[in-house]
Image (cartoon, rainbow, N blue to C red):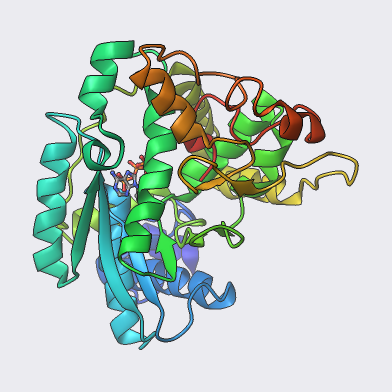
Amino acid sequence: MEQERERNGRLCCLCSGRAALRRPKTLQQLCRECFFRVFEDEIHQVIVSNGLFTRGERVAIGASGGKDSTVLAYVLAKLNQTHDYGLHLFLLSVDEGITGYRDDSLETVHRNQIQYGLPLKVVSYKDLYGWTMDEIVATIGKKNNCTFCGVFRRQALDRGAALLKVDKLVTGHNADDIAETVLLNILRGDIARLSRCTSITTGEDGPIPRCKPFKYTYEKEIVMYAYFKRLDYFSTECIYSPNAYRGFAREFIKDLERLRPRAVLDIIRSGENFRISTTAKMPEQGTCERCGYISSQKWCKACVLLDGLNRGLPKLGIGRSHGVIGASRDRNERNGGKTIESKQCGTLDF
Ligand SMILES: Nc1ncnc2c1ncn2[C@@H]1O[C@H](COP(=O)(O)OP(=O)(O)OP(=O)(O)O)[C@@H](O)[C@H]1O
């Protein structure tokens, strides 16, 4: 039957209409409408089976204007209506202050606000930290700038979410992002992050839990969905983010996916099945003495980085430094010398 359909040309394997695409995750031939339906249904199943939301919750969607968060905002708004989740949705954007990149993508988010009828809140690095990324890069150069950006963005999203008084924050991290992060954490031997990076919800012990409804959604399908729905999104890469190591991991996964589409899901499953041995010491969660943000050190990573910037010593918080020199040693020693904040790229931790 299947072969017969193939012979008769490209027919949708669900409705026998004319196929418009080959679904990257399963290689099924599908028409547009069936693709939209299976794509949305899968995300709905992920939301329901993981109990991501509770009726009446206020949920902020981390909106960068890129394909992932644009599709996330569109699909969540749609599912909220069709399945009557009863959620109050908001768009939350962080303006990192990157001229020619974030200013353009924020224009997209402003349009999405109107297109999807969702209220938008924008918080900026300049207001929160006194520095734009343009100014930081002018001071420190392009090397290591992603460390500043990742650490600051994570905290800025939490601060924006607090201003919006939301119960949850969702981001557009997709299956490819997660598989890539699993691989990078293995390559770096970072067991603490490895065990966390596959969790669909994180930060339940922090200020605002974060969820990744696209945990099992393939990047290629997000792009297809955005394309066929003609969604308005911004597709330029960040001008400051050449990260060769991450790029290599990404290409490796794409090669595996070409040979076997399930590879992406299998890498995520491998990450999920890693268990931390009970003897491995995990960082103790506390609060930053300077700004009150969650931290396993005396000062949170953002404060350490800012302190370095403001004192003209921008390299102070880069790499495996541990909070305020000396001041953090006590807590750090108790943690067996490992900290969740000692890695270079903020995006290794979602
Ligand atoms: N400036 C920002 N403001 C708000 N949310 C952001 C911002 N940058 C990233 N995010 C959130 O983090 C997710 C992952 O961001 P990442 O930088 O990896 O971009 P991406 O994979 O290209 O996603 P997107 O296509 O949505 O830009 C985004 O989908 C979004 O939910």
